[in-house]
Image (cartoon, rainbow, N blue to C red; front, side, top):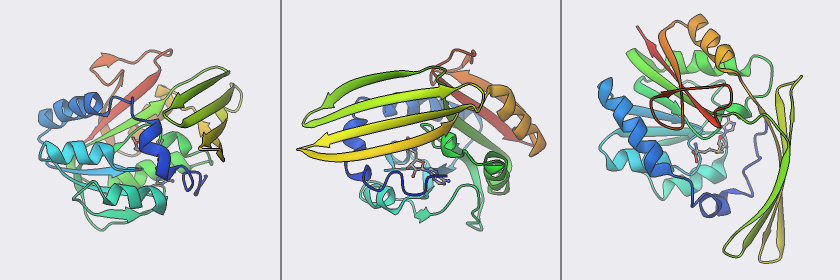
Length: 232
Ligand SMILES: C[S@@+](CC[C@H](N)C(=O)[O-])C[C@H]1O[C@@H](n2cnc3c(N)ncnc32)[C@H](O)[C@@H]1O
């Protein structure tokens, strides 16, 4: 697990993700939450709090956890709900929620053996009866490189997926006004079947895998997977 991978990135995180369709993603979450009468939400790996903020604007009561203080410091400026620095594989907030979300590949950071199982167990403990869980996974299966820019920030990325280990290794260099920020990280690329199996073992009754922040069924080639489960 990379505890401090986002320490230097926090300040530029929202800038480099300015084109991400958080509003569209939150509309999908809202549709899901309305179906299951959700009022309270925990955002696990909430980062700088953008999903939380947009959900709060819709009237949901949200709280967030993240392992990185620097990300939470940015979130604090945006959200009303409480934020706790915590590891999603081992936390106890002593309360329960109607829904838990884990968005934008936060779960893929769980690369250590058993870390995914531990996180799902912690999520289950923090859900009310009938509560729902939505894990949004990154699902690449290849290698590549690209250079892009965000105003004065240039990003050079290289990524490599190892099919045997299911680990994607990325190396990213940001050039911010002549200053370099380097970010090397690993992500575990979980299959739908692995996650559904962990959900079942943790006592979730109903689970489905969607793609593209809508209600279309996931495919092995989906760019992102949104995996949903419900407690009895
Ligand atoms: C790609 S960011 C996504 C942030 C946010 N969910 C979003 O959609 O913008 C991944 C986040 O997961 C957090 N993270 C990684 N491992 C974690 C862990 N074990 N427990 C809690 N948060 C973690 C990172 O600190 C980072 O903020």
